[in-house]
Image 1 (cartoon, rainbow, N blue to C red):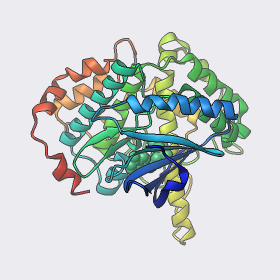
Image 2: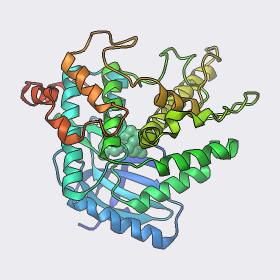
Image 3: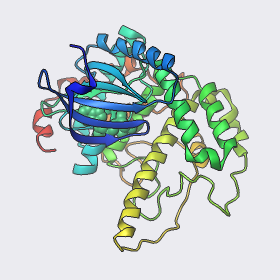
Length: 367
Ligand code: ADP
Ligand code: MG
């Protein structure tokens, strides 16, 4: 059926991301419940039409590991994308609600995401580009599916332009922005970048927190990432010229590192919002503590060892060896050495997960 704005009735706000918001809606003529994503695009009409054409590919993306697509339309100045509604929401919301996710369930998530990524790549030559817990969705049937993949090159560009144009750190530090743009340009985005993001996401689910934040307590996290260069703080010396960032390996890791840095930034922002909320309720929380700029974080990711399940404050020996080894294969910094989704599907942990008797439907009913 043809989708029209007038036929959709808003039911509930599901969440907000960088580029827009998502609402639960009903398609009145058919009674179908959908998720409607509204993306604000600052682009010329010709570009918008091109985006719509490109989004059409989503009609052909048919897999049980991929959110199905109902259609997209222009609603000036927005683009609306209507997709399958997943009634248990995204995995970030789930772990924030119920805490760290059982490693056997994380194994099922890995399996579903890898199947989804492999399908997208083999059938359509699509690289996801935005694997993170909020783009992995779950429903009460216990199905796990991925959404928000990069089908439309034009849409990716437009969101990037819109984001760049309005982002607060632009005004703070044009140099940093120019660097980030150059960094992500040089950095070739490949299926291996998706694998890096998958590894980070799985650790996040298993720990119940984003693995790059040093400390979980509310007053010592990456509080000022957004401001990046707080007043009175010297700009980070451009020790960016550090060999590992400049070396071919560093650059090839750029996209993934940048993605993790963005994730951390988003995370920090959320925490800050929460904290601000609490402050306004009169609870005083000390500020201060560690502040890390996005640049420092980027350096940290490039220079420090990748996160592992069984090291660090939460993990020691707690998780099955197979899972730990799997994560290591996802988080190899050298993209040539890092496994592909197809390799990973043959990993021992995935063989185990495929035959393990995990009741996802039962699990979903506990959310
Ligand atoms: P982000 O993925 O960066 O959080 P989005 O705008 O893509 O931002 O999505 C916002 C939120 O809406 C997500 O975190 C997710 O919880 C929810 N959401 C997105 N798509 C769906 C869907 N198809 N069904 C149910 N909830 C969804
Ligand atoms: Mg999303």
